[in-house]
Image (tube, rainbow, N blue to C red; front, top):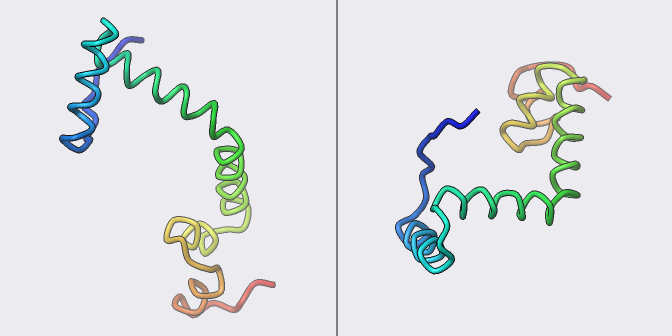
Length: 87
C-alpha cells in the first residue's frame, strides 16, 4: 500500500529533508521513511516501555486510560473524577 499523507514539520526540518534528499539523490519521502525506521530501531526499548504503559492503562480501566493520555497520576485523575482510589 503506497499512500501519501502530509507530515507537519518545522520549516528548518523541511529544509534539512530537502537538502538531504538532493545530496543523496533520493526522494524526500525516502529520507523521512529511513529516518523513522532508524529512530524506531535506536529507540526500541522506549517504544516497548510505551506499549507496556498503554497496555497497563487499558487493563486498569477508564481512569487509568485518562491518566495515561493526560500524563497525570492515576490518583490525581481519580480525585478529579470523584472516584475511590484504586490500590
